[in-house]
Length: 319
Image (tube, rainbow, N blue to C red; front, side, top):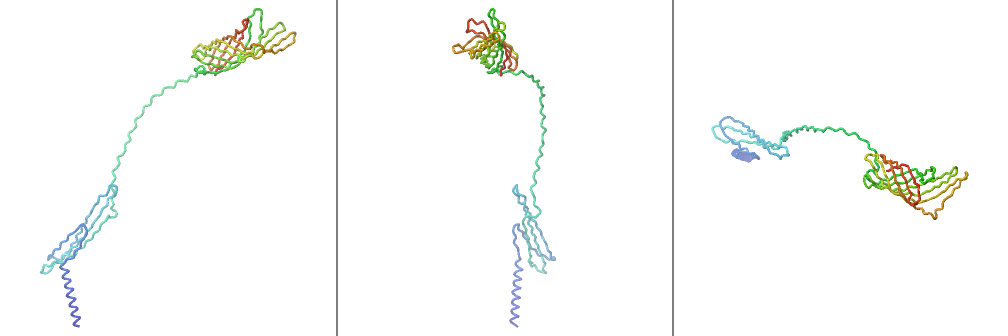
């Protein structure tokens, strides 16, 4: 029993000693920044409880492109002052610090964008359109052949021919033939051109005595070369075509009628000179579009006793 009493007394003394030691050393709590210092005072006034709430706001400037973050730190300090009767004893004070940091929810602020200046569209000045001049009326010009434009031109010719004799006392019947072939016009200047031709010529010579007659038909290649001289400024021009020609005899046929009996003979050209030559002169008019009308005369210069001409009248067209 005695041992139990001693043990309880010893525990009581030790607990009292520990309590006194704790009263002499006040309990302090160290907090993170910001630091708060608490002073404890003792007075004879009744015990008062003082609560100090300190709010520290730290604003961190964000990068230009990041929103602003706000950190709030709240520190609450409670100080208790208790009086002592007839003695000055420092009463321990308890300090409680509550710190919270971090961005507050719902308080994120974004940088206010600067309003863009409104673009003011300046009205475009109206362009003055020049007054349209009335279009001149189109005058259709007659189509010109390539020869009139200064280039080499080609054409066709077809004409009727007739042999006329100048012998005294002789008369020839009307027996028309035909010339047809190609024309080439080679201009030298605006008014003069060289004009070679290649024609097939079939000519008839008929002499009648009463009811009897004698008819000769020849076929040949006729190649005249002339100077094509054009007179005039408009589309219609007069033409003078002097020059010469050469021919080559291809066939010779003779037909006789005596007393109502007809006889036809084909000439033998084996020992006959087939080449001939002579002079030619043409007069005509050239219409717009390449059409031309012309009359010509061919005179044989190979036979000195020749007293006849081959006259032609026909049309041609130059492309």
